[in-house]
Length: 301
Image (tube, rainbow, N blue to C red):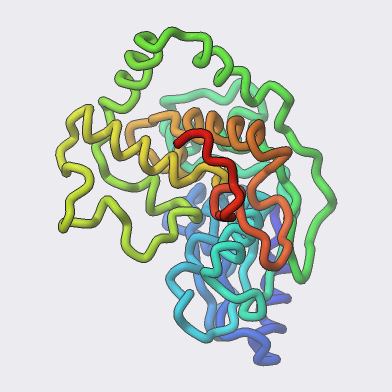
């Protein structure tokens, strides 16, 4: 995947014509396998833009930094990133007319952390797909779902019908077995909040975990506080997770966070579906758990 020249042409055109005030894309970092988010505000800065196999960051999350402004923003999005755009539009975090969306079809991106291990000799590449990011191996949407301009040929989703297979296995466990399973996972959490920061659906202005009066969740990395953090956060993502996998990718202790997200995706799809978050933008539409009507059933009360 390399759209560098085409995106530079589009960015230069948009900035020269005054159609946008900035272009969100990526630039090269210090290392060959480092590609980091970048904002070009002038035509001269366009030459720094790159879009290559390491353009892994979901840029839609960066729009939250500009939600209160009036700037017109061009943004480059892959398929999963575009679902994040839909998420923000549905949450009224940014207006559609402020965005110029440059969609790129994606055949998968590489994980810079894996590349670092491979270049250092700690990991060998046995198959071509070994270099791909884990989140790309089960990609449901490699093609942008919303865009103003599209680059590339349509790609075939990699995600199979067995994406809930591991969830089904966990559901078959007893309550005690499930507790021990998740206790072993969440006990390693250091509460760095990297998963929250990388998530486009975590767009509350004041997060419950930053509240001090009242303090809903303790600041310690005890198993009870860790459980509370992950369960509350996952519940807030129910019906809203776009499966970009950024939360799991940035976790420094490798907690498989998408296990919890996919369990809730499966449940929301069964209770309210068929439903897949962020797959289509319809003005005014809200995710299932973001809508309340007086005639909603209340048998659970």
